[in-house]
Length: 208
Image 1 (cartoon, rainbow, N blue to C red):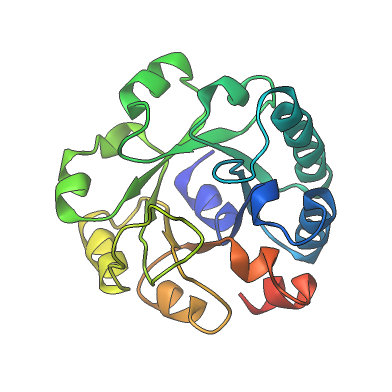
Image 2: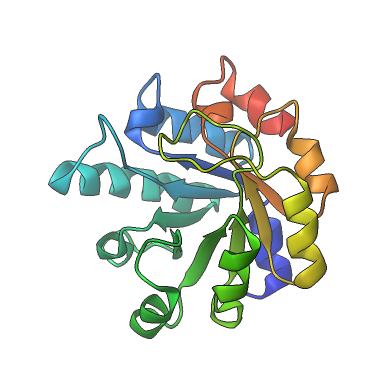
């Protein structure tokens, strides 16, 4: 997938696991997919999350929905799930398995990498990844280990250094501030609670 197409597919990027949902995660994703999300990241991680065969079974159900709706399906940092779920790719953080190792194992998969400061950006092998996740842009309570918010200027900084790489903002983004992230130069916004906890999922997706 070339950068132009990938950038479009990352425009409305929903990140979710069962631990993030007020309702059935399958129903939640169906509603979000039908409303127009363009990418989905399966992030079954943290307190209350599923493990083992239950995690795999949920992943397969969510993968089916993405197939049916033409939504990009990304796995969050669990490389052992990529092949069983036939994922389009994987997203990792700075402390996860290195992107060099992932690229050797999976030469044709999409790889996304989180970067939150200049040091991380400079030390990352940008040439072998497919997109960057920048953040946390705003303060977030969804991730217990979230770093300090970096603001939309971080989006502008990355865009200035890497004008062509697909770029997604994440962290504390909702329907009231998503436009700031796009205006700063991001191709898309990645959200969790803005969709998972929305009273009206379809409306939330459309407003992002």
